[in-house]
Every structure is written in structure tokens, then in C-alpha cells.
Length: 323
Image 1: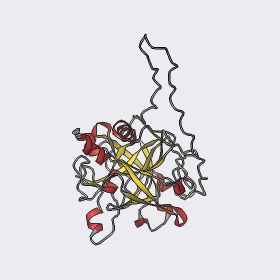
Image 2: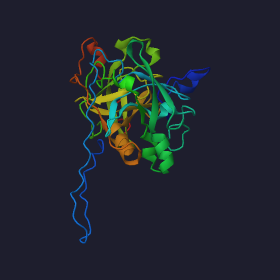
Image 3: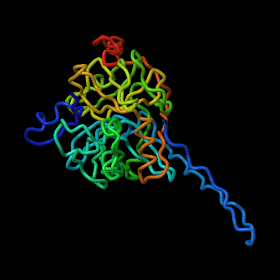
Image 4: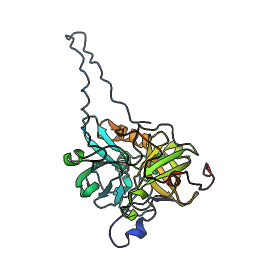
């Protein structure tokens, strides 16, 4: 049984309802224009140049970065994963699509689950009291329902949303994952059983103790024809960790926290594969070419200030038990 992994929601009974929980498509090549032979030839139109990258805030001075919390109006509070850019230079912050969900925690099929619409306001809460209001401009759930998607693996594991950041938030954004650094690109080879992974959760339930946020995990294998991965971490995702970034042992972005699995592997987490969900967004979304933004600091699997035992792969059930 799969439950949506921990998005924290406000209001009476919210805990009971929510306690449970490749590669980007390449830029379009310029096409030469062919005119009829009776017309005078004109030079082919060149593809527009990509917008220059923003001058990112320093890692230490940034208020917005992977791992800051997002609260979707009508939905819940989650942890953001990575920073993305559109071909026109627009900057987006990633979250899980189910962060905008309005149904029960057992609704894990994005093709049928209730959700807030695209255009919904999202509050981004950064460091040192910074707050800004962004807009949910992409939801895999909304897109799949609009497309009439029927593939069961896609419906079950495509759990990805994008929040457009306002200019004042872009000005204080850095794309580096806290503690670990990176990402160093998008992983496209899955997460085989036994592979180590690293994550950063930022649930309000962690009480603001940042040392509880970085954690290591081990993969129990790919699921859903590669659309997802089953992962055990030293401490499993809790409400509010939904959407958290996952990196592989090379610092590449492998996915985002989607579900808490009760069976067949109890207290494991389901991770949506980033290469798949990003490719789907590029194919079926309406934002143009989207790409992951690499971190400005190199990746390390042994960040300073984190106890080595907290980054050791958890024992868990036998690796590959669900394969």
C-alpha cells in the first residue's frame, strides 16, 4: 500500500489525513526554412539564443534554495527539491504535484486524484524569515488528467510540480542542495538496488534543527518500469518532507520524495524519477524547454557537520526485497 508521503497540512485533523505520504528534453534545434522554387530564397531563421543565467546569490547568503518549504493554497506544506529554468530564462522551484492535492492521503494515482489547478498561489518560505508568493505553473497531475493519460506506471509515479518564482525571490536564490552540494546534472540510469542516495528534508516537524535534515539512504530497486525508486533512509520522510530532493552517489539529481510505502516494504519511501517526470513536463507541459540548474558548489557525500553514522546506508529489509 502506498500513501502520499508527508505533506504537512494546516487545520483540524490534518495530521490524521496527511501523516502518511530521460534527462531533460534537449533544446529544439533550429529548422531551415525551405521556400518553393518560384520564390526568392531567404536565409534560414536561427533559433533564438538561450536567455543568460541569472547571477545566483551566494550559497551562504541565499534565502531560497532546494529544501525551502512551500505551502500551496488549498493544499499543504512541502519541501522543495531543485531549481529549474525555462528556455526564456524563467526560474522555477520544484515541488511534488501532490503538494497541491485536495483529496485523501491514499490518493496516489495522479490521473484521478483531486488537485488544485495550475495558477494556484504558493508561499515560499526561505531562510532568515524571507517569504514570497510564487505561482504553481505546472502540475503533472493536472497535465495527465488533461492529456487523458492511461499508462498505470506514469499515473502512479509522475508526481512533479513547478512553482514560478517572483523576481524578488530569484534575486536571492541559489540552486545548490544544502549540506551535500550539487546537483551535478540529471541521473538517467535509475537507482539500482543497493545504490546509495542522499536527501534533504525540511519538514516543520524537524523543529528547525537543520542537522536533522540531511540524510542518506539505500535503494531497494526501481519500480514502475523505471518511473520510481524504493528507498530506505536513516530516518524516513515525515509530513512536510514531500517533494524533497534525492541525489545519487555522484551528486546527480535522481528524483523527489513522493510516497510512504506500507507494503510490501514497510516504512520505505517512494521516489519519483526526475528524468522521467522532467521529460514528461517538456513533452506535455506548456512551459517550453525546462532544464535542471546545477549547484554552484561541488557535491560531497560526507558534508561537514553531519555525523558519519547519520550518513551510513540504513540496514532495512534485504535489498531488492521488492524486486
